[in-house]
Length: 104
Image 1 (tube, rainbow, N blue to C red):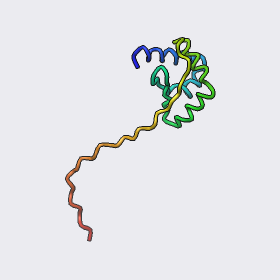
Image 2 (cartoon, rainbow, N blue to C red):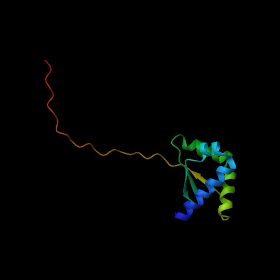
Image 3 (spheres, rainbow, N blue to C red):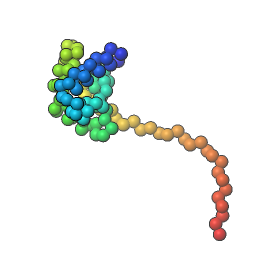
Image 4 (spheres, rainbow, N blue to C red):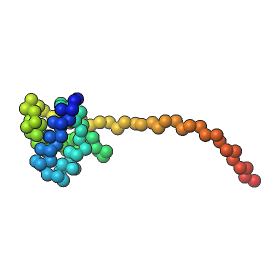
């Protein structure tokens, strides 16, 4: 994906915001990111699969229309969601242990 793809995505999001209103945009589209011209990530911290299916059911035609206004060659929208990435913290550095006081 290149810079012009991201610029196109920003313009699509502006069209979408104007079409659906600020509150709907914030609720359903603000967390989306462009994966490629063919796919849009539904990246939400909470329930990404629900976000994907809701947008697919209620807004995909509007989203497609906004994309077609930007790039006439776009003929479908694939919504995908990213799986959570497990991040394992680096191992703790071993600190010299202090002797524990003896309890009598």
